[in-house]
Length: 155
Image (cartoon, rainbow, N blue to C red; front, top):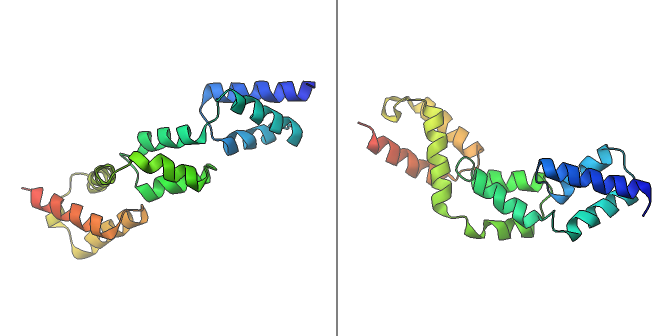
């Protein structure tokens, strides 16, 4: 093993100590650190051999941590950006359910309303709210259902 490979593996281990990363994220960080393609490949193989990089585990943890604040669509998009393969993302969403998305939608709605009442809103203001939630990746039927629930619950 030459010196550059050893340094690349050491750098990879240090990066993983700070934060869990996907294979793509670690690869990009090693390239930015100035290591050659051969050294990066060695470092990735080294850490994967010990199980320190696992995109499925990463995706499951990411979903678990963010499911209360983001829509399923937004979570999928973020994981794709991080270089997680689509099959792995689908597998990671196995335990995700509709209630998780409803919880996140309710939280986004409360945050956006900031104490305002839905029943007192103008038509345009409600449409802006619906558009915002749709851009966040929530389905229109779910948005309407949650808005009706919220409005019915208001005093």
